Image (cartoon, rainbow, N blue to C red; front, side, top):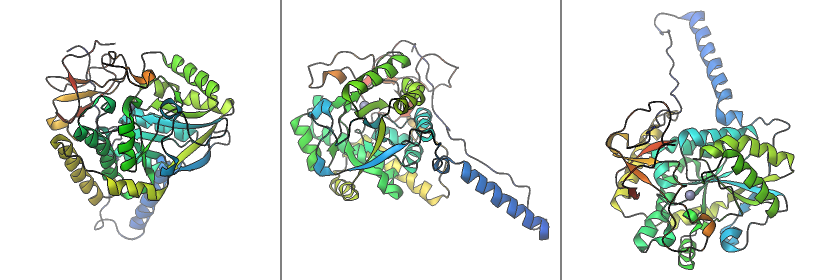
Length: 399
Ligand SMILES: [Zn+2]
């Protein structure tokens, strides 16, 4: 194959401590001193942890201007699909990031948001959650809203099977629920259709599931093959034209990672104010109560494995900071993460042409090889074979 596979593993290296101390050999004052030293060091580590660091904001940080609870009764929002949007004042923006989590890039996005004390909403993919639950847990722990974006990014307006639609829509939420059981406030019934491809029937199904479709007002175009500078320019230009609204970006995209700090600075300089959207708690519970569990065997298998992994993590304290692909051992497929670009034209017109070029590609490779240092695919992640992904015969050219 052309291109280079770069596999994620251990983005957050486990902290290990090797104490040269035994109860039997060092008693009395020396032992007490060592214990105090341990406590101070652990306190220092806690202070330096991402969650703790988020509590201190620079005076000149962009900040989050207000929190807006969006109830289910609000109905679908986003002018790109529904002709109406959230009740935002002029100059107010809602930051949304799709298609993650992907450890290194999502972490960089989280770092940038934390540096500016900004809260956002992440529309996550269930199969990515199943592989990188720790990244989702960090996202939730830092106060962002977790929304869902199907199991494997199928374009549901092109799917005829009701069973596939059900599994895709519910699979994302079930994966997020499996990971965030202890952090339910972050989980929301907000849902975004891949490619914004929706229909009255799909909207009706989402409503029956008590999911709240979230479209967009401003497309960042960070999924297109353009320069980071072009992404920044387009976001600011479109934002100016729209006067604010829901901005679509992708935390898996390197362009987004590259521009986000500057974008946030520009939002501040231009007087925009960030609004953090959150669900009504009862709405999330209603959506979870109606969740129609996916039936497709590969998805069920992946969710079962995720449940087993989360059970193991729950039994271990504190949370395992390691982030290894769940399916690394048995996955002949690699998901190319920078994949929502450079795609063929859709087979037929869809309502939202601005997003119609998206497609997901899975690249089949003979074996997982270590990264030889650059080139080729930007990032790939191990994925379970036949877990609902669509595969293609050959890899795209290296770039
Ligand atoms: Zn997407």
